[in-house]
Length: 224
Image (tube, rainbow, N blue to C red):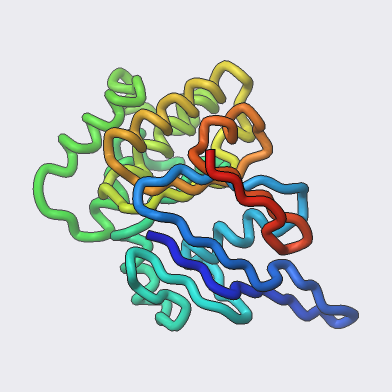
């Protein structure tokens, strides 16, 4: 489902060159749950952003669901992201002027989905325990509730790939456990390939596979 080969990301500044990723190879089969770990600055979030098509690599290739994305233009990348990738941000990234239901519906509307999108949105919000918060705006929701809305939104168009960047990083331990349970339940129900970046050892321990980055390279890759 995800095939990364020789992925390199280099940033040149006026004074020096920063090598963020150095020839990373990563192959993730359909349905696998992979946790990516590593110290700050190891390249975890950069790798996730490149897989999502949010940035371009300096060298290397990325194939998602058998489609090469590194040579696509921005419009084509946007279509791939809309149809194949769900992304959960640590900071939620909800639109403050939209209700919980409208935030969840947004990917569906942007991709011109057919069918009953509102029913799907309400089913997902019920699955994450927010059936009574449909008409609430983000400011009216707790951090844990906002992250649950973000999870529902990520699954809205049934993407084959779900990427999550520190999905429990801004939550207390109780809400973090709840979000993890929901993430795993939704992943199992939808059959999604899941890749997440986390510093949370407990969260990572539930993954099928643990990948560790250091200095822009994979230094450990363990299938459980």
